[in-house]
Image (cartoon, rainbow, N blue to C red):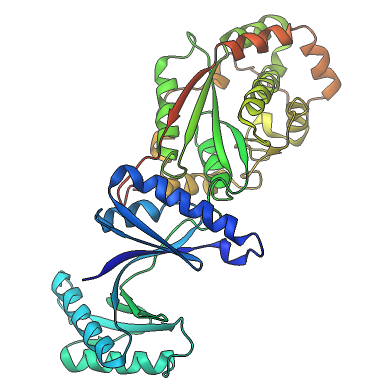
Length: 403
């Protein structure tokens, strides 16, 4: 059988004159993710990519189906498009589907045939071809019944200019845009549930995400650091190159605890994090910061406090979860695959020296007066000097890893 993985692109199809740039980025990402896994040949086509070669095609399908910018993927067989050969190929294809099926249901399976004419010059309409193919399948397998809405087995046909494709599914991808087509941003990665989802959301908008975590050793143990590394390694499933910065933060938190009003501690922590993030963003050529904040979720995320916190950001602060409730964020974390890691019971630095009665309506001038008690520049410089950097290549997780 002449098989390949057909990768259909998502929003790229909506682009105008710069469409080629988006398609090239998608092609490069696919190539980089597949390169460590085998010998694959990539054929770039109009709004899609064909993956063939000596590498495992089911493996390639698993990998590519998770990449931002992918609408869906299919493991397809190439067959002739003239009606007699196409009919024979469809009947044989159904035979293989039946042979691979576990009939635990104890009833004859149902089936459907769907046809899409990509080449509108084909002499028969899509529904006419589908009817003829469906009848041929019924003639060969009379125990089958037709169910066009929820069939047990589905044969899908795409009629192209120089042939046809047979496949049984269009496995959905994340959609969106290819990572790297929308610039770079630095995500403040806490290791909790929210920030990994925020990072993923930005990846699906084409943003290359650089991760920045703050670690308060020795007050917070090494398990917290390893948890963040595990999250970033997992998120490397979605972009070809990932970088994690870990910044020491204990000295900053100790200074804030010793010199500043207790209710403002968390706000002051976050303002200092932004200052370190500004430096990392400049190094990486990033155009924005990303956080996992949601309005009202915790005391530091009221509008007044968010204004006070982000006043120290030198770049736009993107907050993709800002209007979501916690159950919605948890559901997304499960779908992304980070939830099981995020709920590991290892605290992050923001839990250190938590105020008993945190401020919920911070006054910016009052926050700045409190911050004037700190040697801000020296603390930021010391944290930047202690940055640890870890790079990750694209990671592979098999189909079903979300569960």
